[in-house]
Image 1: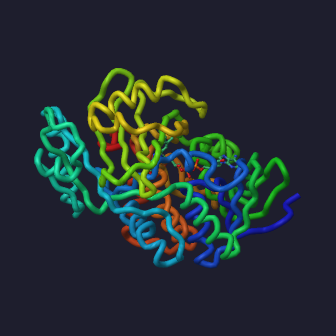
Image 2 (image 1 turned 60 degrees about the vertical axis):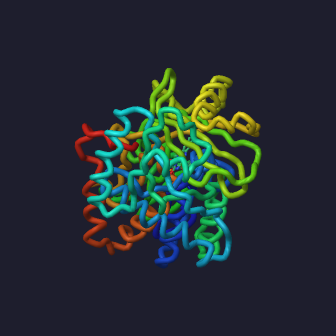
Length: 385
Ligand SMILES: Cc1cc2nc3c(=O)[nH]c(=O)nc-3n(C[C@H](O)[C@H](O)[C@H](O)COP(=O)(O)OP(=O)(O)OC[C@H]3O[C@@H](n4cnc5c(N)ncnc54)[C@H](O)[C@@H]3O)c2cc1C
């Protein structure tokens, strides 16, 4: 039995679902959010280390993240609570000629989209991040308007603001079916009941494919596992997010920054990918990343690691999200496949989804949706995925 009726039901209270619910409520759309876990942000959101950048290599992600940066950076002023937003920028470092070349090639694309990013020579980079190992350092890119915020504080803040605006949340409840009648969505079924609605947003993250399958659809989102960690808080010494794209045995790039309370937060991309939904941390991760980080910033050898964890990237074949209405059933909307960037994309995507549900998209939204449509050619791969 469908006990209650809503204009929209959002499946997933994560990096995407929470801002989506907030912006839907802002637009006066009565909204229910259903999540299988016990509270907001308990899927991949809480695993994210909080990096937020607009410096991508494709226009849709750039535009969505510029909007996210606007929302993160003004949140405290607008709502009064802190997300620990810090505009420290991103620095991609180059120790190899090939990395210098590929980062400089990317700069051309990024400049063509109007992004504030530039090449720093070796000394400029050492002035920005004085602890960097100078041996073999060639320089790197720096994008001062990028930054970081706390995914945990963000989830709580988006949840609280959405609830204040009347959004209803059902935690510990799993969506098991999307009910359709004559080609249209009419409700969702859960393990505890059901709700009537004409609009369903799949914001199911790493589990989005099984959510789509409950509507008789498929979407190419395949989860893989990534580990992260945090050190004890120390005196501020590192301003930007540092990204090292050199591959080594067992891993590709890794990235880390010092967040506002002082801990260094870090994450690595395993190679080959660890496909699946295993969220148990391993004993192999810390020795692997610690060696790389201490090689890059030797003084990190003096800092103690407090905790490590593992979470999931909801991957698509080309590293970009899939956003859009399904041709059928009418009223079913995908906001899935955030890969390693769902935290930074979330507010921008939430704002876009709200305009889609209100049928008030702009010409720029149309271009974003064209790029992120589900039936695109997945052959290309985004350079900074
Ligand atoms: C170690 C690590 C570091 C990362 N660092 C960053 C970073 O610095 N910056 C960045 O932008 N991103 C980062 N990410 C990626 C980011 O965490 C994800 O891309 C993002 O959280 C995905 O958002 P989402 O809303 O799609 O999924 P989630 O946040 O996982 O939300 C999806 C929700 O849907 C719910 N759900 C799914 N199926 C159902 C169902 N059937 N019924 C009810 N509920 C359901 C889940 O319970 C979940 O809560 C990192 C990820 C990891 C693992």
